[in-house]
Amino acid sequence: MKVFKFGGASVSSVEKIKNIGEIIKNYPHEQLVIIISAIGKTTNALEKVAEAFFEERKEDALQLFEQIKNSHLNTLKYLCTLNWQKAENQLKDFFTEIEWLLYDKPVRNYDYYYDQIVCCGELLSTAIISNYLNEINIRNQWIDVRDLLQTDNNFRDAAINWTVSSNKITNATHQLFIHSNLIITQGFIGATADNESTTLGREGSDYSAAIFANILSAENLIIWKDVEGVMNADPKQFPSAQYISELSYKEVIEMAYYGAQVIHPKTIKPLQNAKIPLHVKCFLNPGSPGTIISNKLVHNLPPIIVVKDNQVLLQLNSKDFSFMEEESVGKLYQLFYNG
Image (cartoon, rainbow, N blue to C red; front, top):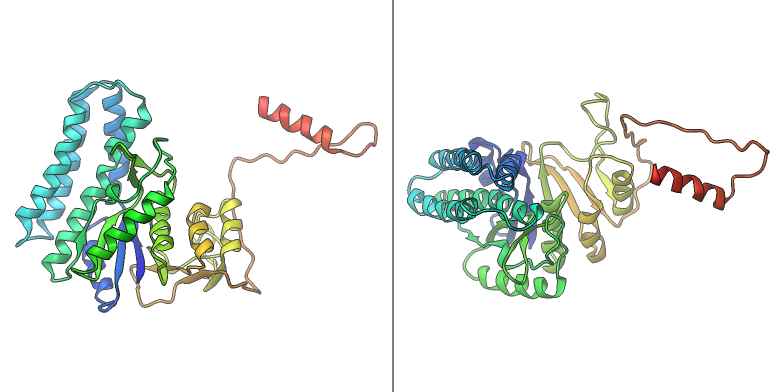
């Protein structure tokens, strides 16, 4: 069993959504759990809806949400014919869930409303893609991840209840795999024990995929991106950047710590703990080998180049020729923190 994750860039157009079907056809006998992000810039658009609602600009919020609705219905129109009515009804259920909220007035904090509204993006994208795949005879089971991933109520950066989530995911996937080898669900979102939607914070979709891979003891996790794999520098800034075929978990965590735009450390940890390899592959060229990230130590790597803008280098010297001891350095850090 493998876990796939497709990000917003890989589902940002009708053509790219169709490409997902072509990729899946390369794994005809595999059991796959597929985690999908919101389409393109949908999350940004929903954030504007949440801001307008919280500022009590109801008409603006409804108008902005109407644009999101029309965009998704238009995408659906180009992907589904036989299943169009069923798919439209599913989307309309999610539209209604948000519109009920938008007609109310905010009485809780912004983070709560952010999660209730923004979670819609992943639900819409997966519903469209699930119905499209069924349309082209790639049978799959769609499930709302909020029924599987239970979190605390730290809205916008919720923590997973691993015990409850493990039981729910294991039981649900076992039942769903009876009907087909393909399960479609959402990244980035979960729900509290009271069924209130939550989001998992930065890089939440990758993290969701790692959670599923860990709980299900997947053979591997494949994250499909718009690049050939991990590179030693940003190719937009360094045209001579080199592709890296293999990396260790520790190396990736260190790269991310220093600011490289690679896999977030919180995604790596569930995989590292379970010794599950992570493949970063290109959805535009699925036949390319990509980058494999695992426990294996890799030697002779090229230099990793990370550019950080708007930084200042300070050089500190003592006036009495004494050493800079821990107490003095601690005072300096405190001054910077207070400043």
